[in-house]
Image 1: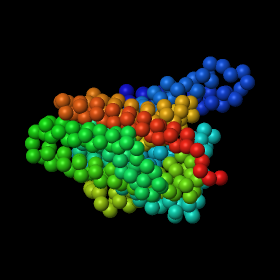
Image 2: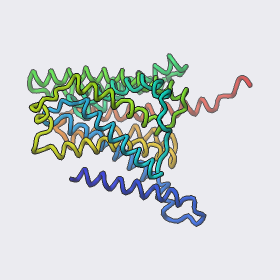
Image 3: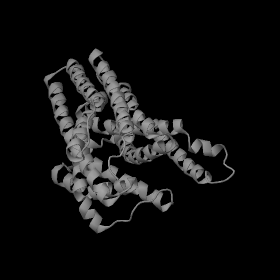
Image 4: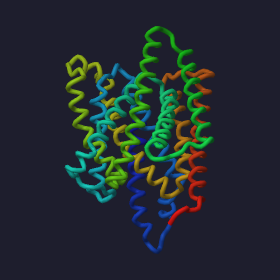
Length: 354
């Protein structure tokens, strides 16, 4: 009930803020305008929504032998579509209407999205939240070098240093989890989680890089991307769940036990709606602060997400695991600083041609 209450409060805050945004155009202004443009409030909402989605996903995936991952992702996608459709009908947000030609061009991105979120759910099932968060940093390395290959990007010395710290934090996390294993089954689950985590890193990098190419061609905005990603992935996920997952009454009873059924459904709904909140809060944070502040928040946000795993779940707590969280946190900070320094240096370069 506490999680549900937090979600309802966040939705109330969301609608209040939209009303304040509309009143911001009033010449009289007022106290409400200052809240609508509050940097600390936008940052807090972004952090809470990120933690909320990670914790609820972990709660569903790690409890009561849950194995209907495709079904879970399809429900989350449907919740996301329902949420943004309702907000569009209320005039809160806007995005493009469905176009079959655009959908055909976007379909490969939807398949990559399914691969990314499925491998992510499998990794989160077998790994603790701190380890999952730390290893997720490795995706940054793949994306950075993908941009070097396909978009003519570059990797600075400072960014390279942050990559080395990310790898080092992952090694520490491995030692921390290995030290906490108690049986051969625990070790097997751990290695299985690492397999899905590395698969997820490659799938995530491919999704981000190919989506960047497609966005440049279609000029999609944030909610356009969210709409097409979720709408096109739902049929793929439904086909996958009916073809590859066990829909027998016994397995359904195992995944949704009577004593925990309502809590599981609530967690699934919250995690789906949280994805919308993250997207909105990201845009809000960028609008009222700066890209520099937002990148720093993204780096700093990994610390509370990792700590939430230690607080809410039975994650390993030892020297190696705590050290890996700290080093992973520092690596995120260094990378954010490196990207900002690179942008500043590029903006100061004199043009060499007209």
